[in-house]
Amino acid sequence: MLILVSLLQVLLHVLFEHAAGYALFTVKEVEEIGMLLPQVEESVLSLGKFNSMVSLAAFFPFKSAQAALENMNAISEGVVHADLKLFLETNLPLSGKKKAVLGVSDAKIGAALQEEFTISIQTVGVVAEIGRGVRLHFHSLVKGLTGQAASKAQLGLGHSYSRAKVKFNVNRVDNMIIQSIALLDQLDKDINTFSMRVREWYGYHFPELVKVVSDNSMYCKLAQLIGNRKELSEESLESLEEVVMDSAKAQAILDASRSSMGMDISPIDLINIERFSDRVVSLAAYRLELQEYLRSKMSQVAPNLAALIGEVVGARLISHAGSLTNLAKYPASTVQILGAEKALFRALKTRGNTPKYGLIFHSTFIGRAAAKNKGRISRYLANKCTIASRIDCFSEVPTSVFGDKLRGQVEERLSFYETGEVPRKNVDVMKDAVKEAENGEAETPVVKKKKKKDTAEEMEVQTEETPAAENGADTPAKKKKKKIKAEEEEVAAEETEPAAKKKKRKSEAVEAEPEEEAPETPVTEKKKKKKRKEAAE
Image 1 (cartoon, rainbow, N blue to C red):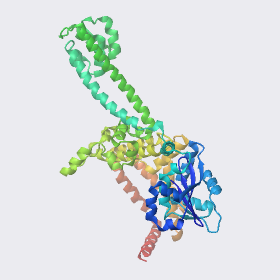
Image 2 (cartoon, rainbow, N blue to C red):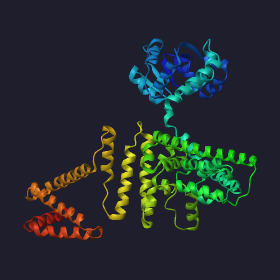
Image 3 (cartoon, helix red, strand yellow):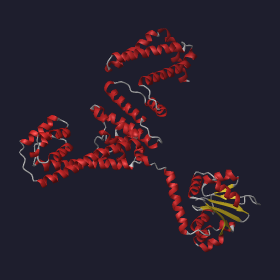
Image 4 (cartoon, helix red, strand yellow):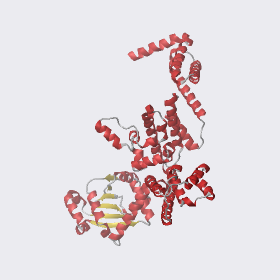
C-alpha cells in the first residue's frame, strides 16, 4: 500500500493505492488530527466518524489487470509509474501559499516522488492512521465499488504479483525429481518382494529354474513364457534364447525341465502365476522408463550435479535436502554427511568417531579410493557437489559444462592420491569452464597447462623485476631464462623418476641452482641485508 499526504493551508490530501486504482482523499482539520492521535485511532473504526474527516477528491481506475500489475511492480521497486505521475499532476495541487508536504509510508517510493516533484516528504505522524481507515472503509468511500468486487480485485492482483515475483519455470521443478526418486526406491523394494513371491510360487512346479536363472526380472519372464514345464520342447528353445540371451543357458533350462522333481500344477494355478509374473515384468519395464524420466529431469533441473555425481545420487541428495534450493544453501560439511544423521548423533552422544560420508558414498569416486583416502575424497567430493548445486540453482541457462569440469577435478584428485601428480587449481578450471560455457568450444588439456605455466612464469618475472631494478641485478630476460631452465629440469625429473623420488629430485635441482648462479651471490646477500634493514626500521 502507498499513502501520500500533502499539507496545503488546512487541507491534507491522501493518495491511496488499491488493486482497483488510485484514489485521492481530502482530510479536514489537519492540526487537530495531528494533536489528537488516540482520538483518531478510535474514530478510524467507525465509518460515520471517518466520513466526517475524509472525503473522496478523485479516483483513477486501472484499465486492465495488466496495468494494475505494472503499477504494483513499479511501486514495489520504488519507481514512479506514468499513471501515478499523471494522476498526481492532475489532481494534487502542488502550488499554493504553503509548500506542499507529502507523507509516505514507504521511504523508497517517497524518495522517488521527492525527486520527481521536488517536494518535502513526511513518513511519520498521522499518516499511518489515516491510511488504516482508508484501507478499512475503501469500498464504502468510493461510489460504485462493492466489497466483493474490491476483494476479487485484490485477490487477482495478488496472484499475478506473486507469480511474476516467483518467476515460475515449469521445466525446472525439483518436486518431480523428489517424487520420482521416492517412487524408484519403492519400485525396487516391490519388484524384489514380488519376484521372491514368484520364485516361491513357481518353484513348487519347476524348482530347478532358480539355479539356472538368478535375475529376478528374467525369472518372471521365463515363468510367464514356460508355464507348464512338461510342454517345453526343442521348438521352444529359440524363444528361451531370446529371453535369457544365451544358448547354453536355454539348453540347460530345457534339460532341467525334462528331469525336474517339481510337483504337477493345475491350469488354474498356472494362469494365476502367469498373471502375477506379467505384473512383475510390467513393473520392471516401468521402472526402466521411470529411471529414464529421472535422467531427463535431472538434466533439466540440475545438469551439473548429475554430471558430477550421477542422476540417482544427485536426486537422492535433492530429495533428502527437500529441494534444490535447500541443497544449495547447505555447506559442504553438511552435504558430506547428508543421509548419515543417525550415525552422526550417535557418535556425538557416545563421543566416538563421526561418519565420513552419507549419501555420497554411493558415488563411484569413494569406492575407487583407497581405505585411507575415503574420508579425504568424500570431503573433496562434497565440496564440488555444493558448488554444482549452487550453479544449478542460481544459473538462468542450464548447462553441464561446470559439472564435467568438476568431475575432472575429482578424477585428478583421485590420481593425486594414488600417484602424487599435482592437480590443476580450481581458479584455472573455473575460468576454462566459464569460457567454454560462453563460447561452446572446449579446449585441450595441453593448451590449458601451457597457458597456466606461461601465466605463472610471467607473474614470477614481474615480481622479480622490481627488486632487481632497485639493486642493479641482472636483466629480467636472464632471470626468465634461468627460471625456465630450472622448471625444465624439474619436469624432466618428474617424468623419469617415480612418484616416491619426486621430492628428492626437486631438492637436488634446487641445490644445483646456487652452483650455476655463484657469481650472483653478492647481489642476493645485498637483497637480504636490505630487507632486514627495512624490517628493522
